[in-house]
Length: 221
Image (cartoon, rainbow, N blue to C red):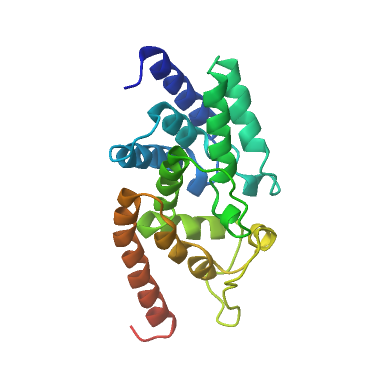
């Protein structure tokens, strides 16, 4: 259970994140944060975790996504640390939350950079990855592609299935490629039983969508 003092911190964190993400790109905005937060709460029901850590990490995980800060992945953890320190959160909690934020991203897995492990990280990572797949994941992918002025699809630009972290961060590939370079890989990278189960249906929906996309692209439907 979360005590009253921790509940107050959670409320202040929500207020801070909502205000900070007022003008954020639609796929990484306050509503994305809340979906991840709710996913994390759902998954936590079947995991033994520090719920306070999970809630804080879910709320602060995209406070400054590196893709909007020239690839600098130190900005988000610093903002999160400063905010939690200002509100007198225990230092061990702060360090755990910051480590989760630092190691959450998919790109950390490309060069085996993820050296931190915790059940709380697994829960928040699954929660974030769930929002990257399925119907909402498709919408987010094309929203970001439009934000970056990327083509929907280019038959002569194949997906890069062996990207390094730096290649992933600097990619300008068509949005459809992103399905093969990330989204379709996430089902098999889920950490928790609940995450794996929830990912199955969302993954299947993406496969159905892609078949329909190619049929329409090629004039077959």
